[in-house]
Image (cartoon, rainbow, N blue to C red; front, side, top):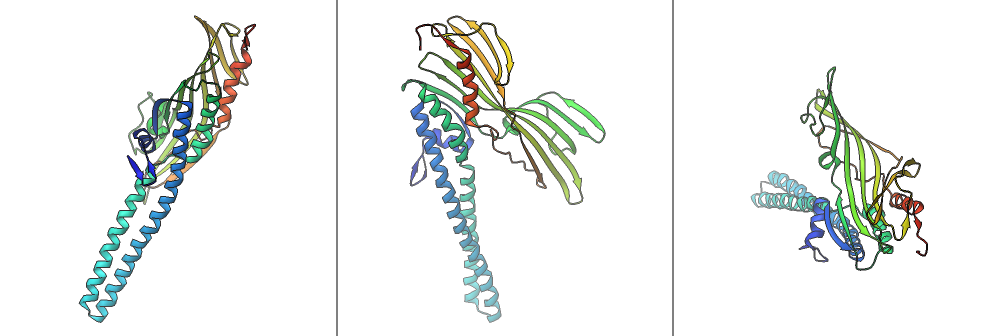
Length: 324
């Protein structure tokens, strides 16, 4: 399938650009090729949107010229000029509408380039250095809005002076007046990989979002206020082979580098690590349309956070004698 004469997209690439959801398995080099292409396509779309804006302005100009021509033709009582003005007016409307929808389609057919280049690609590069060229990485990515895709951990609503705590997964009716508060878990980046030293890595990166919504009745209609606070948590499950590494068994600790637990399972040590990064971003939005547009998923995450958590495993592990 094609998005332009310059870019041929696979079905997976097009689906990801439209839905912001991805689930597949590829080698590290294949993933790097995939995401670099997505990042470059984003540059094309930025240029295309600007180009369609210019074309849309031509349509608006034709509408204006058509209206002025009709007015001028009426004063001259010229039927030919009136007809010419009407034609310009109709052509301008059609022109503006066509390129408006072309531009609107492009704005949904995209993924933030900065996010790909600064948060996804660095992790793939890091993993590639620790893997065999033929080994594959399994990725599940969901960059959709937490409000629609996230797991509701807690929800409460206050209407007038009453306060009720709702069961998880049971938010209030849409557009009901009052205050609505929720805590959402938005898992947006899960993956699996195997290193050359026999280590199996599973990770899950998610946002904890504390979200509040206030809906009030004003003379001009309803008014919405949204507030949200984001924190990113990186969780890892690291399986380290006993023949290569030694770890303190049955260890469970909370440290500045994260919370971790070690246990034995067959030929492996299983190390669970979870670290909450203190950086918190706060967003406030006011609207009269009731349309909530999420801030970017993973906004507080940095690729360095992934490295910091993975480093905990190798700090704890001691190579078995004779192993490197």
